Length: 329
Image (cartoon, rainbow, N blue to C red; front, side, top):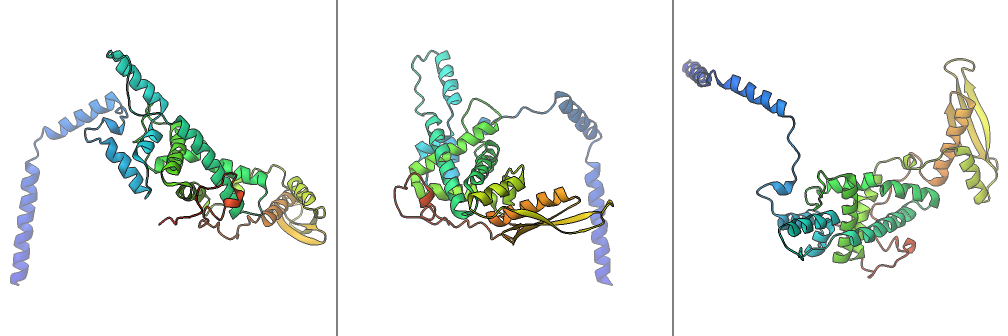
C-alpha cells in the first residue's frame, strides 16, 4: 500500500512540474516564431553555399580523409590536382590580377591532363572486365554495356556518392554532372600514378563495374529487331537459320488470347516466347534466344566481381607495369 502512495505522490509531482514548465513559456513566443517563419518564407530559400565557405573548413584534411575513406594511398599533390579544374585556376588568376599581382603563383595545376588519362583508363579497364566476365556476349553489345557504365550520368552518380562534391575546386557552383564525371576520371588517373595499375583496376572494378550487381544485363542492350539480330548472329557463327514455329495458343479471337512460339535452328529449340499475338510472341522468343546465346538469361550465374588485373590482361591493349596483383580488403 505504501508503494502505491509513493507512486501517486511522484506522479503528482511530475504533473506539477510539467504545468510549471509550460507556464514559463511567455505568450509572445508563439507570435514571434510565426513572424520569423513568415519572413523566412517571404525571403525564399537560402542560397546554396560551398562547403569551403564554412569556418571549420580544412582542405588538407579533406584531401587526406578522402583517400582514407576509400582505403587508397594517393599522392597528396596529385590528388589535389585531380580536384582542381581549369575554371578555378582562371578565377584565382583574375582575383590576384585584380589586386595588382602581375604574375600570379598558385602552386597547383589543373586536372585536364588527368581527365584525359583517366578517360582512357576507365574505358579500357571496363571493357577488359566485361570481355572477361561475359565471354559469350558479342563485342558490339560489350560496347553498349561499357558506354552505359561510363556515361556522364553514371560517372557523376558514383562520384557524388564518393563525396567529391564538397572537395572539387571549380568556379562553378553548384557542381554539375559534367564536373563530377570529369573529376572521377581524374581521380582514377591520380590513383594509377600514385599506387599503380593494380589498385587502379580494382578501383574501377569495384565502383564502376560493380553497378552491374543484381541488374538485368539485357537492359543495357539496345536491340530494335531481335529476330534480325538472331539471324545475323546465327549466320556469323555458321548456324542454321532460325525458324519460328507456333507451339500452342489459347483464347484465339478473344481479349485474353495467348500464343506460344518456339524458335528452332537445325531442329534444336533455341528459345520460346509468349504474346497476345504471333508477332509479339516471335519477338519475345527471339529475345529469349539471344539471352540463351549471350549468356544473359535471367537465371544466369552472377557476374564475377573478383576478377583481377591479371585475369583481364589478355584483353588490355596496354600491359600493366607489374604483374603483382593486390587484393582489395
